[in-house]
Image 1 (cartoon, rainbow, N blue to C red):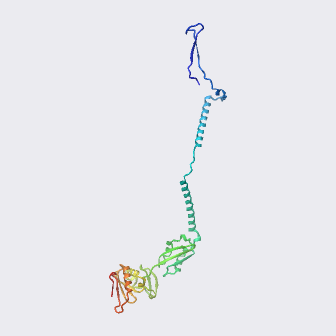
Image 2: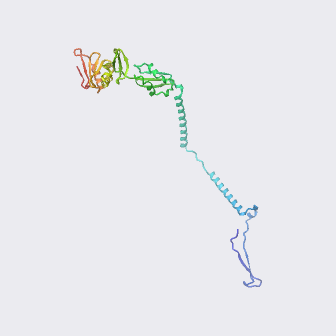
Image 3: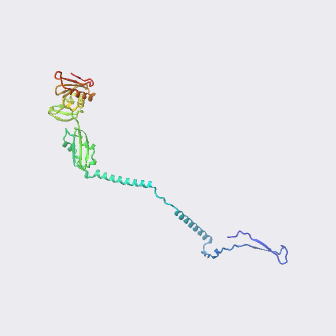
Length: 317
């Protein structure tokens, strides 16, 4: 590298000469810095042939910079501190993992229970039948045999029992490992309808539930003419009245008739007449009639007619 120090000039005169004249000689000199002792001791590296010294110096400088950067990165990495995971986050992860395992186990158990042949239906018990026999219900439910209990529903049982008109509603309950309990609620017959030589038991909706040739064997009133003869409106009005009566009062009736929907009349087995009127306030009328029938009879003044058409002001005569 060239020195930035300027050269100094000195003049020397010849012997015996005076001040500056033509014979003066001008010389120039510069100071060269002496190398440090450490540099003198270091051996010089030979220059590789064919390569400029400046190029090798530049590469050495770049390598030195890379080494310094790598050393800085290592020093920065050595200063990174690993903090422990928060307890709340670790607890939440453990809870989610445990919940997932439990859900998988429960799903597996449910699948095994739903499709396992171990819980297949083998026995069906029936309760609540009066018009039907348990054997009739069991025969209708035969398709359920061998089916896993968890797959049996009330809707399926009701669908299989639809052909049995006597059944109004039904419920089923599983009795593991292989039992099914079926509770039947039958329709309630309220009257007998004569059709030819037979008497049909009908409910308040006019559904024919059974038939008998002896009306005396059934404690139900007889509706004269039947639903087809007296008309649907009159039949429904009469049947609605009969459906509202208590069982003990219904057992005392002989027959029922209606001239119109507002003129329903009932006959008791002992010949007494009940003027019911229309089907309105039937629950109140039924209570009033039951109370009147419990009054002790007076042999001197026997009651022939019970008029409950106006239930808040009943009349007997």
